[in-house]
Amino acid sequence: MVDTDNILTVNELTKHFRDFSLKNVSFRLPRSYVMGFVGPNGSGKSTTIKLILNLLCKDSGQINVFGLDNLEHELAIKNRMAFVFDENHFYEELSIRDMARIIAPFYRHWEPQTFEKSLKDFDLNPKQKIKQLSKGMKMKFSLAIALSHGAELLIMDEPTAGLDPMARSELLDILATLIQDERNSVFFSTHITPDLDKIADYVTFINQGEIVLSAPKDDILEKYGVIKGSCDLLDEESKRLFVGIKTNQFGFEGLVRDKEKALRHFRGLALLEKPSLEDIMLYTVRGEHHA
Amino acid sequence: MLNLVRKDLLLLKRSLWLSALYVLLALFVFRTMPGGALSAATVGATYMFMIQALTQDDKNKSEIMLNSLPMRRQDIVLAKYLSVFIYAILVIIGCLLAQSVVSIIGIPMPIDWISLEKITGALVAMAVLISIYFPIYFKFGYLRSRMVGMILFLTCLFFLPRAVGLTVRELGGVGNPAFRTILAILQEAGNWLQTQADWQIATYLLVLALILMAASARLSLGFYRRREF
Image (cartoon, rainbow over the protein chains, first blue to last red):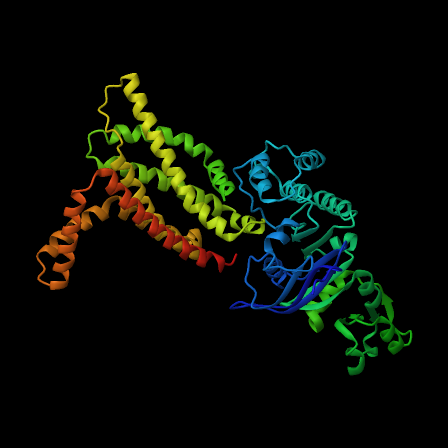
């Protein structure tokens, strides 16, 4: 069955290594949205992306891109998608122009004019060697390539890591422009959650190789809450409401999955605050050991 | 696939120019040495280019980028085999050009002209070398295979001719009937080859090398399809 509503569907994806396993990872990215794939370092973000790109062989599960199986239709899929990695994999000794000359013939719909325009827009000199580019410029070069072959899905692995605030903001602006075309979708992994606050429509949170949650960002921020109060409000029953909790001599602070239920439980005696995605990530990872 | 070959040539752009100097140097160094030396120099230069291209692929883990592009893994494998012969042809052309320059300008230096026999020798040696090396490279990657490559290269260059000579001499004295039968067959094959023209011998060797390479490419394809990055 061809799944046309979702541009990317990952179902029960499993991959075992000697010291790490990706366990039954499932999520869906609807067409024309941005999904932030968030989790701490070593949680399985890059492994999942490599499995989508067929750089690793899955043990079990299903990956569909544009409604097509990622292995059976690998070439057709890769023609319609683009990638940005967390580190440079281009040939350092080549110039931007030469690197593009190598890449262009592989794509069925390469538009040289779009590439030239992107280089101008991104202020990139085609004669400059890849090794002379800053990380932000390399990122922009990858995006110029993505734009030049009309990629409908952009997969990015930690694109903002190591970028200065200016370059990060610039990259996020480019992504925001890219997504204005309703055919385009972006799937990007990060551990820098404020980036998601700016552009993500959906958030998928992975921890220790397992999906903790995958939902629209607004729904998550709507349902979760940070509750603060004095320690005497806490008993075994109330502790069960929390995803993670920290206590000190002044009181407690914790993340709840259902803020309405928590408010009813504490009957106005505790304080409710809006959580950030960072709060959700930290409390979920650290649980009761949150410091 | 041809685009990948072009990629390797672009990466080697600077080295290819340096190869002109290398060939001139080889002509000078090997001017008084027996025939096989120039073939060895051709193998040496070709091997050098091959390793430089592999180093570039390895440097920034560029295979990750290549394998994310819309191309089949088999194209990457076959392009590597093809590239080596393009380097060999470029080196041979460079050799002929250098010899012509020396001859036309009249530099007082005896020239050991590269012949069909030497070209065949170089191509066959290179084919044997990559047929053994590439499956190991595609299975284990550049870093873990480079020592094997170096040992193979040195074996092709220096030890193989001597080892064959020594083995034949040693085996001559062995009384084992199986060895004696093999030796007799080899002797007969040698005698038969002597009745053939040079171009025929060259053709047989090239066909054998091609069969060996086809088997090697098949093995490499199998390894690379399962390779993880």
